[in-house]
Length: 491
Image 1 (cartoon, rainbow, N blue to C red):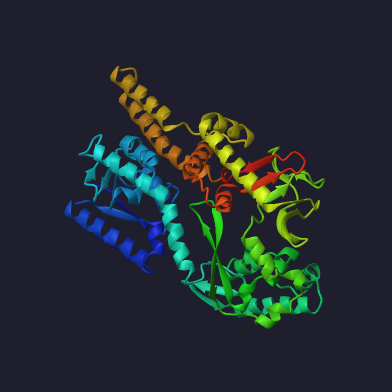
Image 2 (cartoon, helix red, strand yellow):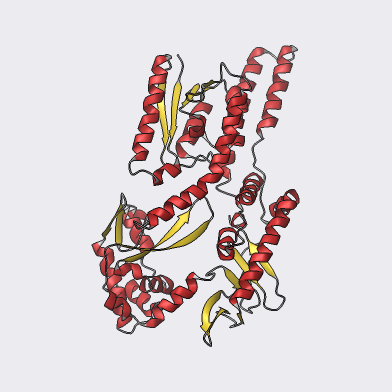
C-alpha cells in the first residue's frame, strides 16, 4: 500500500491581499489534492501545511517534518498542488526532484503542472516553470512592500507593543501593562530621570516588557525578576503612539531593511496628549527633531575616530564608536558624533556614503568568488559536517557497481544502500537546520548571492538605497574612509 503525503503552503504575499485568504487557500489546496488522491487510489497518510511561509527557502517547519518522515520511510509519495507550493528556488527544488527523491524512491506529483515523477524524465517544461517561480520570488519583496505601504495608510501594522493586546489585527489596551505606562509618565513628570524610574520599577517588582510578554504567553518558569534599564524607559516616554497616534514602522522580511511610512493611524490611547506634551523635553523628540530624523540617516553611521571605540567581535572591522546623529548646530542640520562631538555637513556625508556604497557593491559583484572566499575566512564560516549530495550519490553508484561485479553480497549492498539513502536526505535536512545555528560556507555564499541579486541602484533616492543595503556605516573624520557592514555579515 502506498503512503502518500499532501503538502500545502500559503504564499506570504497573498496574506496581504485578502483578509481570510489563508484558511481558504490552504483548505482549497488540501481539498484539491485529496480529491486527486482518491481518484488515483493514493492512500493519504498525513497532511502537511505551512502557515504563511515564504517559498523562497526550504526551511519551513511542516516541510522539514515531511522530509524527516520521508527519511524514516513513513511516506513514499509527495503530492502538491503546483511546483511553487513546494518551493520557488529553482536550484533547491530541482535538487530535491532530480536527485534526492529519486534516491529515496519517492514519487513526486505536482497536479497543476501535470508532473508525476514515475512518468516524467528530464521534463523541460517543468524546469522552465521552476525557473519562472524563482524569478517570481525575486519580485515578491517589491510587491509585498507596495502592498504593505497601502495597508499602512489604513491600519496599524504591528505584532506586539507594551501596553496593548494584539489579536487578529485587533488592538486593545492591556489594563495591567497600561497602568505601568501611566506610572512611568507620572514618575517622569515628578522629576525622576530614566535611571531613577528604572530603579523604582524594579523596587515595585514590575516586570519589564520582555518578561511580561513571557508571563502573558504562559511561560511562567522562564520569567526573570525585574531589571529595567533607562533605554526602555526613554523609548516609552518618547513614544507618541501611547496618545493614540501610531506611525507605522514596517519590517520587511524580504528586503533586510526597515522603512517608516509617513502615515499616522489611530490606536486606543493610554495617555492624553497633555500628559505626553508635559513630559520633560529630555525624554522626547521635538517635532523639529522628528522631521530632521525622517530626512536623514539614523542609527546607521558610526564614528571610528572616537577614543571610546572598542572591538565588539572577532572581526577586526567591527567597532563600537559614537553614532553620528542629525542635529541642529547653529541653525543648520549637521551630523554630530555623540561621543567626540565632531560634525559634518549632511549632503557631503550622504553623497559620499552613497557613491562609496555603489562602488563597493559593484566591486563585490565583479569579484564575487574571491570576495566570498575572503568573507568565509573573515566571518569564520565553517563547512557543513555532512557529505554533499553529489559525494553521497557517487558512493551509491560505486556500491551498486561492486554489487553488479559480485564483489559484495546482496544483503551487504542492500544495507549500505539504505544507509546512504538515509544519509542523503538527513544531509539536506541538517544542512538547512545548521545554517540557522552557525554560519556555514553554504549559507554565507547564498546570503551574499541573494544580497547582490536584490541590489537596485537608486540614483534618485540616495538615502533609501543606503538604508536598504547597509546595516552599518563606519566613517572616519580623519582619513575620510568609509567601511560598510552588510546585512549578510550579521550572523
